Length: 347
Ligand SMILES: *[C@@H]1O[C@H](CO)[C@@H](O)[C@H](O)[C@H]1NC(C)=O
Ligand SMILES: *[C@@H]1O[C@H](CO)[C@@H](O)[C@H](O)[C@H]1NC(C)=O
Ligand SMILES: *[C@@H]1O[C@H](CO)[C@@H](O)[C@H](O)[C@H]1NC(C)=O
Image (tube, rainbow, N blue to C red; front, side, top):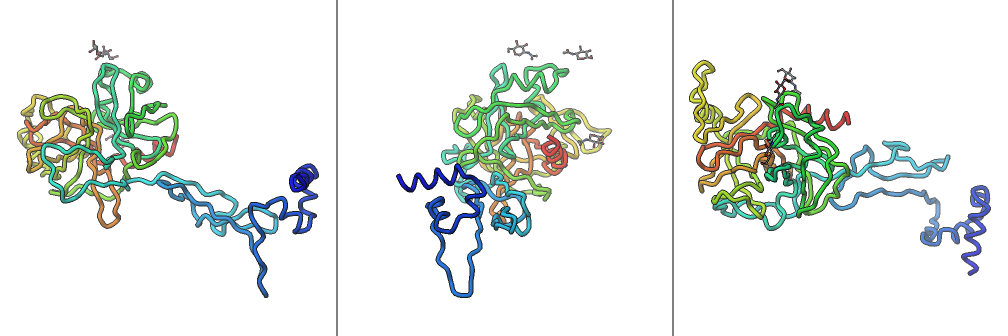
């Protein structure tokens, strides 16, 4: 009771009293933090260190250490009075795909190796993919967004018709949709969530980089909720490992020629992909696995071994190959990165 009385008195008397009090009284006010012992020829400097929760990291300049200055303000040597911010870690799955395991017929993702993978459902119940690129934004294709909408639909028309799930069937609310200004040639759209989604071992964005990871033969992983070998939508997240393909052969496969005047639609599946300087092709795997309807919007994920970080090199646009046509077609992240970063920053 006596200790409590002392604290109440301090609070009532306010700032002036507290400042004028001797050390003894301060000890009572802050008994959770005992006074550090004194040392000969030295003194105690009060400082605090801000740390981020697991799956978050300090974004701001400075090391997170703040010291009391003579005006009793907490300041950092680099950042000054500006407080640090914790941002979501990207591209560091807790259980990454085992590099050497053989993947036949598209493996199931039981351990959450693709925590950036989201599932999107259109208003006529078609499943497609989307990719978390921060704790509040996702990338998908413009074609996915326009499903069951007329070509004249606006992003405001589209946004309320979508259902979006991250992690293990965790429904998240959409604030808005932003279509790429050239979405007839750059098949991309952004989705902003109403709230930041908590990042953990099941929900984590993939990193984007200005580094070009698209090189012939380079392996990437594509996860997705799309149709499987029996042409049924999968109940569980599946993934395949696919090599980046030769661009000219891909163009010949779908358009007959790489010469503009000699091009003619000849897609083996009847539907033509968008192919241009913003796209690259990948597939199939040597085990004859492929992406299929519903996988579009998912990332072509590349493991940068040096940085031990996963990057999206592309977003799957043409998911209709289904092992019948030879290649899936992806929008290059390097082609859209400026627009993505500007759109997120302007918001
Ligand atoms: C949306 O889907 C429904 C049910 O399949 C269909 O009747 C309707 O015509 C579609 N609308 C558009 C704009 O595609
Ligand atoms: C889209 O807009 C154009 C031009 O305004 C119009 O001609 C067309 O009928 C519209 N299409 C649909 C599906 O509403
Ligand atoms: C859209 O295309 C035009 C013409 O090619 C180009 O100038 C513009 O930069 C493109 N916009 C974006 C965001 O890529």
